[in-house]
Image (cartoon, rainbow, N blue to C red; front, side, top):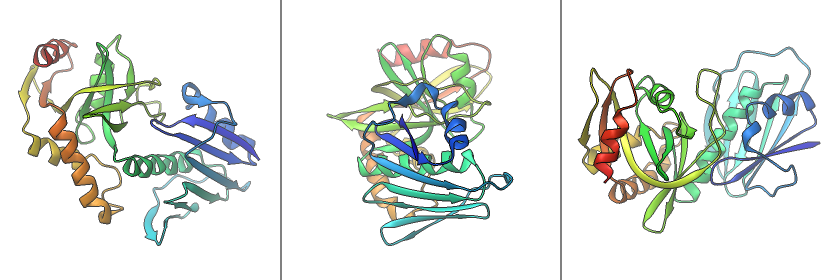
Length: 267
């Protein structure tokens, strides 16, 4: 078997398979995050592939059985051992999207185990700090990232947050598709959180911690699949909001001058 190792955010992920076509398909989108193949990893995914014709990707049903999360879809199935980080996936055809999906779930689990969070959000670096923008699909995360020329994009879809001595740090994750902005490896201490609202003008409003927490809970990818984790995740979100300033950012698609508002609020 061949092995691929990558920087998943605040952990190293590894994928091993005897299907070279699968690893080749993964190497291209993950190129900027690849590590030497022998790098020790916090999670190891073994993938078994057949030679059948590819089938359309569908998200799996996820359920917990003891120490494992089970994944079941018409064209693949697998499991993740929550304590060891070992995972296994079987599919009749090369299906990179299924591997990508399972790796995202692995990151969410690892983040939770680190008392951190994997957020459906955009993260950008600006003046030495990370700034995280969250909202429902279509709220403008990718648009805002595209407007922010000259600033490194940690990701415009999934950002990994970890506690860091009374504050938080944001880490890039390797997941993206051609409709999004390519992420860049990196991390920085968190400067602020922003709930996004598309509007006719740029405007920034302070956001109470309770309202910020409610919006962030809706931005956690595994909430629906793992309701038993809700109390732990809520505690982590509340701590994040208590330690990090939050605003509602109203913005237009015209220019990036909303950064002037952010600079003024953060000073």
